[in-house]
Image 1 (spheres, one colour):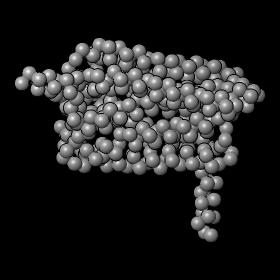
Image 2 (cartoon, one colour; image 1 turned 90 degrees about the vertical axis):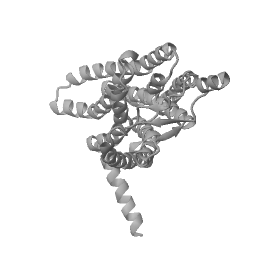
Image 3 (cartoon, rainbow, N blue to C red; image 1 turned 90 degrees about the horizontal axis):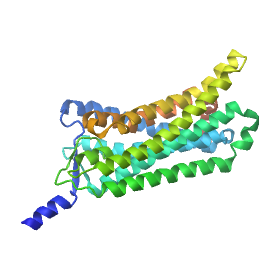
Amino acid sequence: MRGDNQSFLGDPPKDFILLGVSDRPWLELPLFVVLLVSYILAMLGNITIILVSRLDPQLYSPTYIFLGHLSFLDLCYTTTTVPQMLVNMGSSRKTISYGGCTVQYAIFHWLGCTECIVLAAMALDLYVAICEPLRYAVIMHRPLCQQLVAVAWLSGFGNSLVQVVLTVQLPFCGQQVLNNFFCEVPAMIKLSCADTTMNDATLAVLVAFFALVPLVLILLSYGFITRAVLRIQSSRGRCKAFGTCSSHLVVVSLFYLPAIYMYLQPPSSYSQEQGKFISLFYSIITPTLNPFIYTLRNKDVKGALRRLLSRTRRFCRR
């Protein structure tokens, strides 16, 4: 009997129950529809941006290398979480296996950290384009952009690896109900029955480093950009420069504001009820809006879309 109890306390559960909004059954159908429509839009929008940035010869500048990676990240974000959410909302059995849960939060945190650094690289690109336009091609050469992207992906993987190693060691003492839509490290830490001081501290340090350092670099870049733009004599030139930055600034705000609220508050004040809806926002709403923000505000992308559609129509008529 004692051995059974130790096994029950020490062994991880075979699966977790993702509560989602099952405590509010009237919300499940409208939320299912919103998630399904958002997922389809996110897939179409981000795939379009990736194709356009790859196929159009006029979009081979560093800006669109970063934009293509951002769209790929958003595509992976939604695919990591939304299909599982849709399956759970459409069935009475709202579970995910322990292994599936581990893979989900590992990929989710990998992508999140990578996106922080990609957004910082995009801010650097904007800074050089506006503040050093004559040296832009020399500074932002293709190998440098590829190195920045590689650093982003490798850093994200390192962050995720540390989080996974610490989280898989947590005992859950038979607790299986996650008050969330998908598996995420803060929710897993909250569910554990052990002392999670080390996990909380490590999460806070890593998030502070991988989120706040890129954010500080982004804000510094925009500080220099603002100073340079205000020196432009032409009001039309100032509007054009601010218009160039506005799309990136909106995307940064949509990504960072909920993430900071979610991960940089003290563990004692973390609310799973609020956390799960904030997680829902930056896992589906932000990736859905990003491609539309860039296409609606960017003349180059809109022009590339028109050229791609024109080539597609000519091909179909043959």
